[in-house]
Length: 77
Image (spheres, rainbow, N blue to C red):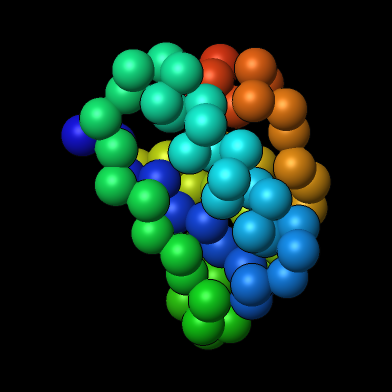
């Protein structure tokens, strides 16, 4: 099971990234757990200075943008 972490404060872009990531994981048939990390100290622990960001199994894959569902599927695969 993949651990998908949305790093952000809950802004509209953060919410969109969460929705897009979930859609990508479902479309790819991936078993996943989606977590939202909203604490700025935790976000900075990932080395992320701009949100939204996506970490897959603890590794940051996207920073400061909301990729398309197709792009996210490639990152999750």
